[in-house]
Each structure stands twice: as C-alpha cells, then as structure tokens.
Length: 333
Image (cartoon, rainbow, N blue to C red; front, top):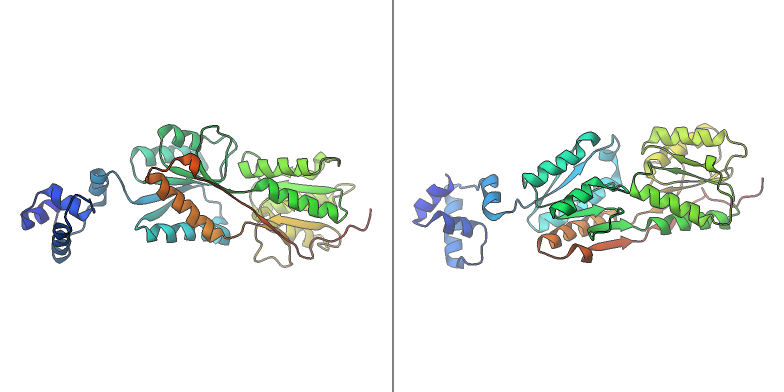
C-alpha cells in the first residue's frame, strides 16, 4: 500500500496523512492516532526517499571514513561509534559508516551533501588544512569534527587536549632523568600529529632536540616497528620514547622486545592510546570515556540540526597519563 491508497482509505488528503505519519504539530492527536492505527493495520511503510523529500530530513547521520585495516578491530574506534549509535537511537535517528578510499573521500562528501542522503556528518582524522571541513562549512552543511583543524571560521568540534597530553609525558620523562627523548609521529598532515609534535618540541625547551629522534611514519603497526629499529641504530640512542598513536605504539613495543630491550630498564616508553593486547605493561596517554565521547558528538549533531550555532559546540577533554613500569629513572649514560 502506498500513501495515496492509505489516504483514500481514510478519506483524507495525502498531505494530512503524510503530516500525521511524520509527527507534524498542526495535526490533531485524534487524527494522528487514527492515521497511525490505519497504517499499522494496512501494513503501510513509508518510502524513505519520499519522506526525505517531503520533510527535508533523512533522520540519518553519517561518517565517511577511509578505514585502515586495523580500524574495525580497534576498541577505541568501536567505543566511539557505539556511543554515537546509542545516542542517535535514543533520538530515533540512525548512523551509517561509509568506507571510502582516500582518493575518493572528498567526492563522497560532495555526493552525500548534494543528494541530501544524511542530515549531518562526523569528520574524523582531521587534517591541519582540511578540504572536507572547508567544503562542509562553505555548503553550510551540519557537521562535527572529531578533532580540530586550522580554520578561522567557527565550526563544531570535539577533541582531546593534544598539547597537554604530550606535555605531561615529556615532563614525566624529564622528571625521571631522561634527556635523550625520541618521538614517533603519525603523518604530520593530521592535525593531532602536528599538535603533538609541536607540543613535544615546546616541552623540551632548554634541551637539545636531536632531529634524528623525530620520526614521522604512517599509522600502522609495521611502520612503528621499523621506526624503532631506526632509533636503535643511532649513537647515542634515545633513553626514552613517546609514540603519538596506539597503532604505531603496538609496533614499537614489538620492536623493542624483538631487539631484547628491557622496556623501562633500558628505554622508557609512553604511547598515546590504549594497548589492550600488549605483551608487557606500557605507560599510556589515555583518551578516557571514549563511548561517552561518541555520545557527545552525536548530541552535537542533533543540536546543530535544531539550529544551535556551531561556535557554541566546541568541546575539549583532558587526556590522562597512566604510568606503569615502562617508565623508570634514567641511571646515566
């Protein structure tokens, strides 16, 4: 049964039936209940595309994501998405994830916006200069950035304090006597990586920053492994290491163990993000309450759709330094 047949059955106009089904306030409760009862009895189901055209909303939010091989097994990613889904389900909304290749990412945003397939988007792994965010802002399309970017126009974002997290790690290592501290970074086009690298150099003010100790690599376990192998060949080699993401961090742990390095005794290690399956305890800079973070971003999208200004939807949470025996006092050398 289609909308016209349902309207004919009730002796009402299609407009009245459509508004009753979609919860418009100008329809009386009595009429709405009559329409809903008839629709249920007749097995009527609305055409989602037609409904989107009628009311201007799809009741769907989306994430366009160039998935890495490890993303679907990453508890932090799954917690964030799970939190979003819970919040949107409670608001009778849906969440879709559209995996894309990096080369097709921006065209996918354009297709979503032009086709009005979703009511809003979450932009993940933000870049220092992010064409996706610039496009969405220019199109005045609702979005929340999971991370910040260098754009002067106000936009909605949720992030952790990258500078504070790295500063805590550096100060901790220096308090343990470490002077030769290395850092493995994600690609510096990513805003979080650029902010963490800048914070690392700033926190080491007054100490010599050996450029050989600064390695930029991809967000992959294998390349974290290879980066540590490079560091171990240096003379003098670093006594401490910070890795700015948990993917490369897992590779760093494996490289140190394979080289026979006693983590904490010979080289202290701090990784940004949880290493749940690590063979040894590792000190981490944690992004707490990941599931709640997902709910916060979903609430931001809902608020944007209700007309709240983007400039009022900017949230910065503090990371937490969790120490284990992977950080110990440097005894010399």
